[in-house]
Image (cartoon, helix red, strand yellow):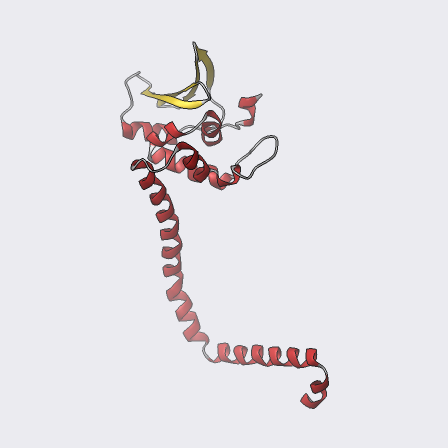
Length: 193
């Protein structure tokens, strides 16, 4: 039967591929227990590998921020990488970027100082209260335990953050992180309306 395929190169290729799959199939059937044990052993290792890749990227970014090696524009591009190539009317970041950015700024509130009002809006949504004080634009977010005010001056770069507990005492760094994590993000598109 193989002699019939010698004149048709496509049939010969299909025959070789078919033989390869049949050999693989017979190998898998003979070694099913070994393969299953190997897969069961490798799954936790793959999970650790994937987790370490994500952690190392975030810690690398955080290390650069703390060392002053990352400028505000580079930090913004790292949080929302698809924004750099966006050419439409109104940018809306992917939910995964928002989630990762929020996690980073909650853990390191000082990184918020590198963001503009747009990025703060992407991360925390529409503010509870929006007001103007002299030349400052103030966005206030209230939670059940605290209040956070973001002050924007000039070109909408975040200039100052005031976080305080409900009893008006200033929030410690730990309390500020906790307060940021409790902000219930409302849709930011409404903030531009």
